[in-house]
Image (tube, rainbow, N blue to C red; front, side):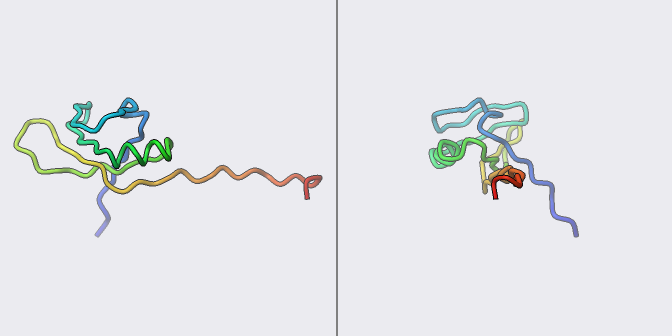
Length: 82
């Protein structure tokens, strides 16, 4: 069985919010906690996983789960720098 697709969002994609709360985005409602904001303040490039929450409303509801950091860009080694 294949793993479900995990959708991720970055701080920039959610408008660099600075306060915890429940925000309406194009994909549905997103609950952002103080801990989520702290991760983004320490790692602005981090992508956090959207976790679906059961809801009674029309729009989907999510909170944020684990985060991942982009791989560092490796610099080529120049022969004269060795």
